[in-house]
Amino acid sequence: IIMVYRFTIISDEIEDFLREIKIDSEATFYELHETILKSCGYADDQMTSFYMCNERWEKGQEVTLVEMGNNFEYDNMIMEATRINELLEDCGQRMIYVYDPMFERYFFGRLAEIMPGYCQGVTCVESMGEAPQQLQQVDPIVSKASATNDWDIDDDFYGDTQYDDTDLDMDSYQDLSFDDGSMF
Image (cartoon, rainbow, N blue to C red):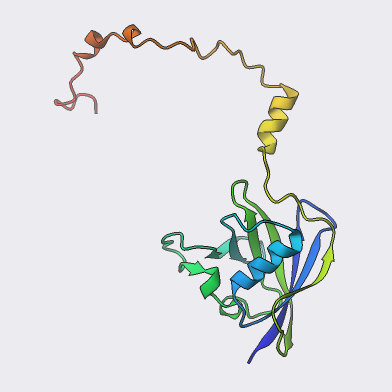
């Protein structure tokens, strides 16, 4: 039986951000991925993933954009080859969508409603708030530390920036032997 799923997508970065998407239960995760990107104005040039989650938002099964290798705990699932109803079938089920893999930024998604019927294509039926910037350019922890200059690092602490390989006395290393097992 084909059903219509309504997903609610939110962000922990932008308080008033919300996307509601209606999609056919037989559609693929790739179609959902494309709709999320389009609804946010994001480019399709990142290695995004969906993760199925439990009620505490702990990651479970991953669905990747491209085949990434073997994970011994879960099957390797690809967005284009995985139908949504293969992993989501109960109202309230949770998932996260990683849109910025470098800084592990993601949207929280919940299967909010399941309705009988058929949905022509995938539709963003409600869009509230501006989406967060797709890619974070600087690590916020590093930029905050460098902006506040609380670290008080002495630039000369690590030594000379000029390296001369004649400074290394190779003769002093000739007495070391690893053959007799004395090092371990």
